[in-house]
Figure 1 (cartoon, rainbow, N blue to C red):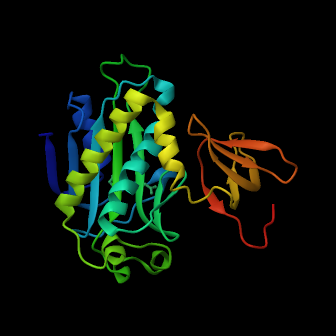
Figure 2 (cartoon, rainbow, N blue to C red):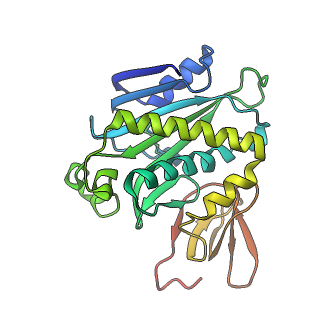
Length: 253
Ligand code: BTN
């Protein structure tokens, strides 16, 4: 049994999980909140929390990974969440690099992976896998600007979902996928991740590692988890992070 800390309300489960990890909490320790007042997404965005209707959790991991491999945790966690959502809904799930989980082009879940300073001793190093899943919300529970772009697990499944059971499934699958990565390498994770790839083969727009806006054909992530985009001249660009979006139909790159 892994320790689980349940809260009625927190600012962000990632913040509380980080505090526990700094005190030495073991791998698999999780923080759950029924409501977050300052839920965080990637790139300083906020995560919209509907009290009691979604899964908002952060799981502490202490993987046997070198610091350079920590960014791969985001894709590994995405695969774990997609696997569980696929199982529960019986539907195809898509992964939008690096951290979004979609049904039919609508966002259902997001991952915010953070870590301790990776320069520290491997013994004290840790990762925090923050996971937000839209579960039992109705679309009207979201602000109007989100209603056209999100979905929820219960809408996809056609019936409501027990959040506590979903959480246990997600934690089990996350730890299993991390164990697989440690044992067999990231290649096996990537192979499965690509089966869900939402962007590969589409025209997209993003910011490359030098900060330049590039448009081109998405080639999918490489063996380090870095996304590749080919512009119209045939040059390949690497995208390490940042916002990626499908280009408008008029943008041919
Ligand atoms: C994203 O889509 O940008 C990532 C969203 C991650 C949201 C979850 S909710 C639980 C955990 N606590 C946070 O503050 N954020 C993550």
